[in-house]
Amino acid sequence: MRDALGTVKDITGSPDLNVLGFCAGGIITSTVLNHLAATGDDSVHSAAFAVTLLDFDSPAPLGAFSSPRLLELARSRSRKDGVITARSLGAVFSWMRPDDLVFNYVVNQWLMGDQPPVFDILAWNADGTNLPAQLHEDFLGIFRDNTLVQKDALTVLGTPVDLSRVTVPLFVSGALTDHLTPWGGCYRTTGAMSGPATFVLSNAGHIASLVNPPGNPKASYYVGGEPGPDPEAWRAGAQQRTGSWWEAWADWLRERSGDEKAAPKRLGNARHRPLEAAPGSYVLDRVPPATIVLP
Image (cartoon, rainbow, N blue to C red):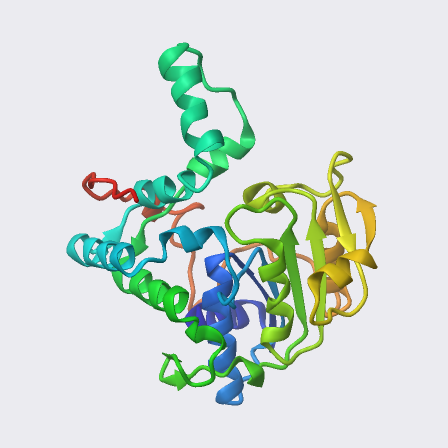
């Protein structure tokens, strides 16, 4: 991510950037922000986090997989294969909601012979990614020991992590019906760092909140005052608005961005030439099928 920041700055000519991290990507983002703050690097002007847990102190659905035996099994498996496959990750998340994400399809498709519905959320849900073994092990350690919010308990990029040193403005979103990262836990991300924070709560679930486009009249989100220690107190004073939380983020981002410029006619620059059309051939890489480990 640090290299990506430098590349974007070089291509755009901007001295700093606004960043946005989703879920586990938000965890990575927070550690990079810590490193930048510790080294006096002002590359990031503001940071947004969507459905991101940084503090794993309170109970969450992921706790069902937090026993030492299961964590060690997952760690040894990913070490052996080099990655934990998208299929294995998807299976773990599906078993957090077995009625909806497992047995529903057993009954309707296997027993009844019905075809699965054409549904955009299912397409996004199936678009998984393999996770490198070392990153997987790092995530397991953060989850098991809650090291991300403990000063100097974790080192990333050679820098001990102390998120309180991060002072950039923060935009944090949670999802009301999220079964992976409960919104109350995402709310605590506003206090994990020292920058002024804004919190917005979507009425949807983990994936649905992210792929919910602006202008959707069926969607809604909550906005409120400055986040305090109690998420329920914040929600009690929040106002519900029609539309997608992306609209609130866009307004927040516009206030923290420079003047608009015309998009360049060519991609990249002399040092960073385009390689191939998006999304890139790497998404077609495959690893041999592995046995799915279930709890």
